[in-house]
Length: 486
Image (cartoon, rainbow, N blue to C red; front, top):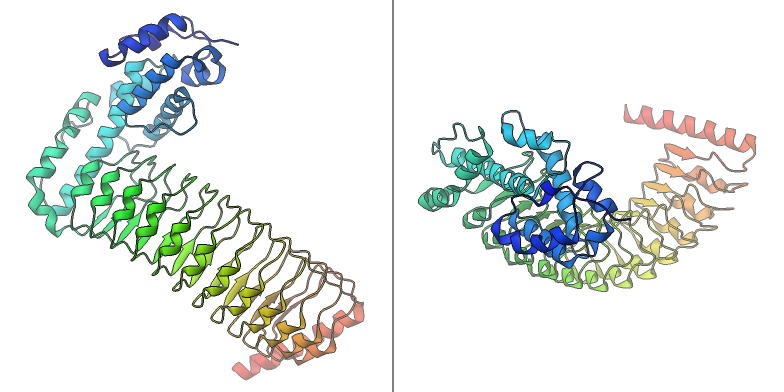
């Protein structure tokens, strides 16, 4: 099925695009059915196969500063840009949308190329003005922004003066160490921010950024960079030049990959990459010798590189809610690890080397497909919390009874038919869940759990009198403990 495009789409094409679009005009057409550019992307087979039109759309994207997503039709990128821009501008505070821009957005017809370019230039200029206002406030310099949003022409013209203003006030920025631009509906940030050589903290979270300029890699004194809760699909490799960076937050974006150059951040202590679309991570992250926290939760990882086992200072590793089917045994080398989260994956086994993690305090393996766990987990002398909930375990090793510091143990939603009497040795245990298994009895040694406050037995095949007896014992024990605390 082919589509007809209105003549307005090709009207008043800028000179630099006119050559390509003169060819596109002939090969494409004249009448548009459904409104707006979305109809073009969804129904245009003829355009999709037009190299001339693709090249022209790439030029549009370059002109408005919108990156071309890999392996995507540039026309779809133009379409996405229009739809995203409409959504973004709708959220701009009152008084920041000129009348002519609002009129274009309210139009029921297909947007023309000049209109698309104008929207792109306006959004970029508006972002520059917002950043400019914040910088001027931070260094205490008055700037005349009157009537800046009276028209898109005013906005674009004023934004064009920003670079010169930065150069003229360079000396004033020497004392600027922190810049907070969170919650401003920014769709872009000016590359001139890369000139703030003494900046130590830059917060850009909770905006609508789809890309960031590579010039941020020039911020040699930067210690904290927050880019969380945006719409980033990629980040520039130049961020790997930030040698003093201690915290990098990239949570809640649309990243499918990260550059290997992040492995050069030798002073990085916290790296947040959760809630993205990562399918892999570079092995070079194993070079981050000072990293203490690595968050990779809620991505699409199917494996992780064994080099992560080199992170000798890592204390917290979050790998939950991915698609991991196995983890490398080298994780057993993480001698300082205190918290390991692997819930919500597709693990069928875990390496016995995890038993070497002598400082581990929390191990979360719930909602996987484990059929057994290694007895070496009984060596985790500092473990306080262990979750094995929602697996396919039919038994657990008696060595878990050696976990003298264990406070909470969740074995619910498995296929256990029995539990070892050695669990009665867990003198510090306060919570034990055995719910939703296939237990027909429990060992009498559990009565020895003198600190136990919570015991879940529901969803098993235990005789009523046994469950009643345990509840009475638990009630008496809790009362005794409470009196002792008083």
